[in-house]
Length: 406
Image 1 (cartoon, one colour):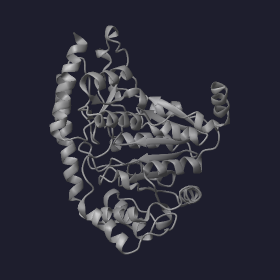
Image 2 (cartoon, rainbow, N blue to C red; image 1 turned 180 degrees about the horizontal axis):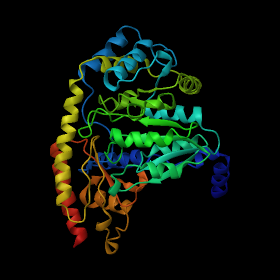
Image 3 (cartoon, helix red, strand yellow; image 1 turned 45 degrees about the horizontal axis):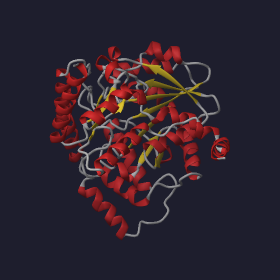
Image 4 (cartoon, rainbow, N blue to C red; image 1 turned 135 degrees about the vertical axis):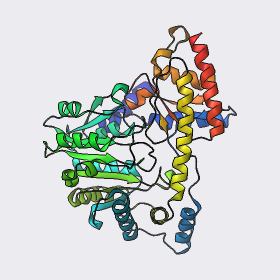
């Protein structure tokens, strides 16, 4: 009876939700937190969330907004002051010019992407996604009835899609190309020359829209200053939606504020979708984001300096570990080493998922297997922990690898 009921319930669920999977990064982080709650000394290197507190002046702005009564609905697209601050940010930092009707504030950058896919994708439209990719891109495309087209990259090409690969992936169904730089999970960033070469391919196909995920732009230490596709190829201004947010830059993940900039027509369609789903982003968070964008930016550099220090330490440690292959990151707070040479059939470690489970059990370190990002044989390490914990984690990993290698 129970099996029959379960089967019937499954049949009643919409196909769109049955074809996606839960976020693996959130699931692994939740498991790490469960073990920590049980008293296990787990060091969580799985969650892409700054370990810094939100800067004080941003929290004070939120408190002031509460006292000032900014607790009501706002315009769907966000308060005018915040949208103007975003325009100013683009002009100041990215040399890009936008108007108020070209800006949409949403509940995080993920929400911005979902709005974009909702606005643009018809059934069976294709979205080109270079792999390794952020885990949510393909499933959000599927939720919006599109088909993700995964283009594999590797360490030899620094995990960056080439113009030839891009051209080969384009069909008459291609609607969107996603570019994430600096990248989650690899930490690699495109140069202006690389972006220009990709832009020249896209210019040949007038029906394609580009989604630039710039969420890690401020945490960059190589190929600086940061450039995105529009900087490299201004001809694509009208066909590029730039997506960003305050979560990573200002350690504001829980505040849930992201934003998109681009063609007024596309932004209007995204706004329409948002108006019938979440409506406006949280009012208090909008005033906090306003303070973040308009306030002292020294806090951002301090965080970036800390990530760079941790990166340099971790990369040096990884280079010493037999069987590990890794590229130095250009930015973000991720390293993406290849662990294929460490697989050991006798110890039931034959893929990256089993390797991640081995580290959780034997080294009490939580990492994300590369399979979650479309790249089997790798793991993602987040150095969003203190240097002290990172040193402990590196030593635990070294000892665990020694046991694997016998």
